[in-house]
Length: 228
Image (tube, rainbow, N blue to C red):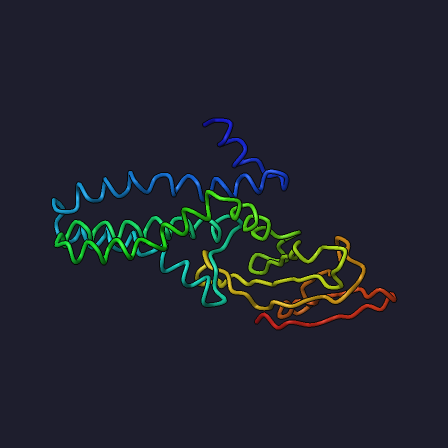
């Protein structure tokens, strides 16, 4: 366990795939424990505690839906990835609460059917698919331009057949720094796929991000993205 923890915390791109696997494996392996625990305590809880438990299980499901359907994400490097396996756990625990509350056979069949997404997530996480998903999870490069602006380039575009580099720019709202908003998702069309191309900088007035993309012929193409 100590070896796994060291591998998970070690900030090295060579270890990112293992970290991604652990992000999924550990929560999913705890699903039977969570199911058993919630089923045991549910009927003994008072109404406020029950509502608190439901909100706790719904929170990662809501955050995952937010990330999948909108341009808003949890801030940080690992948080946007960790929320997905915990959403699977939260969803499964919600089904366990229904299982404990409605015990007639018809309802049990319905709850078992609702567990199919969990079964699919477990299958994908403990098969070779997890490796493929992990390859697309991490950026090729990323950095912070200011306390409220970050960027990332997508390493998946770095191939012998690519003539573009995908990049994204995020802003952290001052009113809630735990979230970040995708301000731009675009591509730098170039055959010079090297680190530092494209380049990012804040404009002198601090209201825009300047993206500089160097073309194969040496021409510098610049784009201004308004962030305020």
